[in-house]
Image (tube, rainbow, N blue to C red; front, side, top):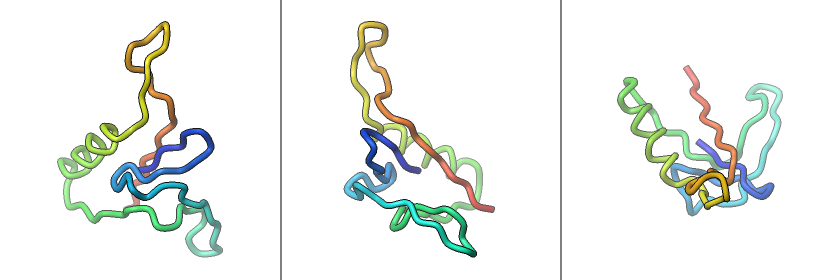
Length: 79
């Protein structure tokens, strides 16, 4: 799960991983290098990861919303 904020990509499951790079590979397609890719066995683990990643997102206040997300997030599930 990644966050794109101010044109930088951050790993939301390992927030110390900042400024990650997007790459393209003939076999893998488009991917983010060094992003955390945990193995899960059921939907409960998926939702726990999504909740944890969401808690690490950049938020701030605006005139219209006290806790507005300041970023875009992307959750990729590979089966």
